Length: 117
Image (tube, rainbow, N blue to C red; front, top):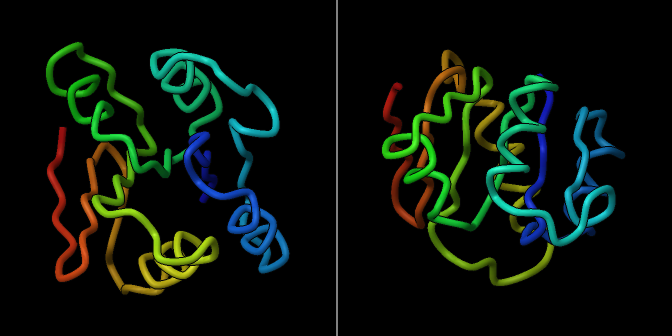
C-alpha cells in the first residue's frame, strides 16, 4: 500500500510513518503549493492513497470525476498533535478487511465511513 500525504498533513507524521515502514510521500516536501487537482493526478499516476484534511477531495471525486484507484482518506477534524494523522493511519491499516481502493474514507472522532466510487 502506498500513500500520499497532502500538504496539510504534518511532516512529523510522514517521517514517523516512513520509520514504521510505510511507503509514503509528502506533497509538502516534494511539490509544495500545488493545486488539489495536481495532487489527484500524482496520486492517480503513482497509485497512492491520498491522506488529507481537505474536504475538497470529495468534490473532486463525486462532482469532477477524479477516480484515484487507491482512494482518498479524509480526516474530518484537525489533529490535536502533529503525530495524530500517523496514529490514525496506523489504526486504519490495522483493521482487517478495510480497503481504500476506489473509496472515499471519512474519519471523524467517532466513526469511519466509506463511500465507493
